Length: 152
Image 1 (spheres, one colour):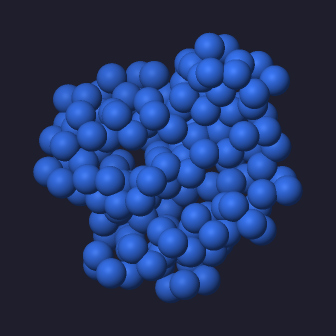
Image 2: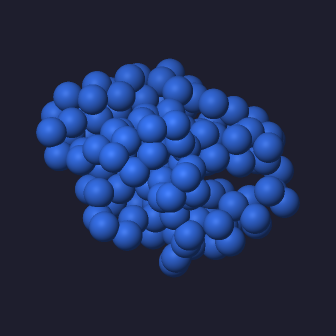
């Protein structure tokens, strides 16, 4: 079993880039990871990791990326029994001022509904992640790595 299973949806590539960066930082800290697209995932894949990390962009008015929707329906039937998790949501205020990073909330609530346990607050990325990879994403991931090290 790996330390972290990262399951993501990405249409334009931004979420995939953030997940690859998170995985690289975690691996650099000795934390093993698997990164896979939600389209190629089954809900039982969350059992591959000691910790679950789900990531998705937000579209329209707070709608999670469409490839994640069937996965979340299946996740609602699963009992995670307090398994630690984190979520990453991306969005852009140019599309919606109020629900631009709603995917972070949708993923967090789905994992809580399945009885998972929040390890760290969700990472929320507004606009392009490129200028935030070495700052916001790195700082969040280092905090995540510390919590993972404490929990495993």
